[in-house]
Length: 497
Image (cartoon, rainbow, N blue to C red):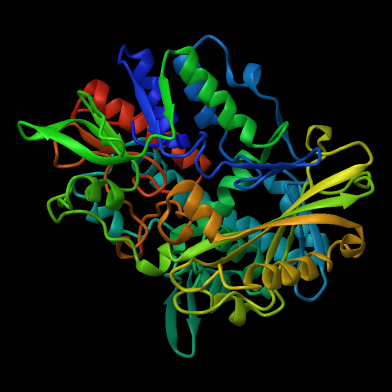
């Protein structure tokens, strides 16, 4: 196993239970990949995902790999509200967790009854897209005829007649324009794509499943921070006798008789294996001497969808968190066009959308203080020099200013801050340019499909956010399940049950 990210560890635990002897080689000093933690002066911060959606993926992992269920290894808390939203015009709304009726009611009160009803109707259509794509995109290996997934748009867009033309939404932005009809609802819709590093103007309409997942399955916090989920998965692996070797960089995949037979480390050590599981397909191909792992027949994601990273600002705040504060607040940009220019060759936005995480968790802060994390989507290192003098701090200042629209007392409470950019992401996860992988989506000519977990090199597989089924905590867990199934059951494996 190359790398100790969440997808690799999910595969390792399942393979160990199936009787395989598993060794994980990780070039850094720890596990978890992008699910990181920063600690200082008694404060703790999640530097990756702040909430868990679709926890059933990890519940299934723990059920299938031991007697202790997930809830006996970590404490899951369903946050309520799921999120508070502060829109460009100053309108605010708090959306209840996992309640379509509650969300419709809240939006109706804040934005008008028609707005609530339009969002409720949208969620019904989004559910249809989810039902059509959940199994082929999350629970099954990538179909050999994957182009069917690329060509068929699963979102049942409404037909709208405008200026003597009948139009249906093909992109997520068009869903907002043609079906929602309120800039605040459009911002609510698009922020889910933006959080995943997707441009709503080019993301297929099927990206409607992203807000649906949150509304349908809820938003969950892991007590002690989401890093605790990585710890629990790592401990499950070690309990099943998975061996971890940290500080061990794999420099090549060894082949014998036409199949993967082990790995070579930077110190010259060669470790034999019956199967090798790599990380990103491009990086894995490089370890094979640049072979075409898919014989020219694999999805080719849109480069624009691979160009985004995150800036994370960890804030140690003076004074306690006020009673009743929302765990997550989304402060929407006041300049949508400027923000969306970050995709492709644009720079970081002047007025970014900022996600504010304020966990009510004494494990993450000293008594009488508060631990807060701000996150924004930004260009990766391919399009912006985050190592330039002052670049990180200048953007962090803009993020704090934006967050101040929702928390006016924030700037005056800051004891200190830690700013993390795509430079940190690249160094800690190996992701080229510090980019963050988006989840795989159907439709849109396949620009958001990811290459298969199996390759044309016998015995060589790929797991994690850059392989099928793409990025995100739930997707990483499913990636591990798919790889384990393909190894244990062989090419006839048809998916998780």
